[in-house]
Length: 103
Image (cartoon, rainbow, N blue to C red; front, side, top):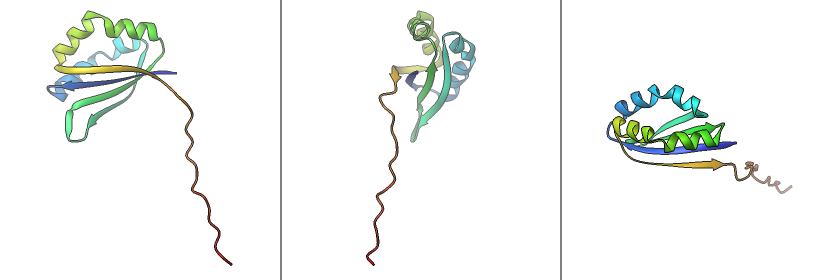
């Protein structure tokens, strides 16, 4: 599975979020399913969001479309970055070692 992790520094979260939410269908049409949306603690205009990607080609076309840059600017994005990610390995939490009590 491929994910797309994005970060936007925005001028106003409420304004950005309204525009972002209005593009939900366009995201779905581009093979993107929103899985999480976060704001940085102490910096609420620094926004992170994670999409599950069903079609990497559609997703790349969507984010490279000049209309996406225009929408970002209109929503108040000051800077941003994105990264396509895939799982590197399964991670299992190991229980702590047990110690036996002296008898």
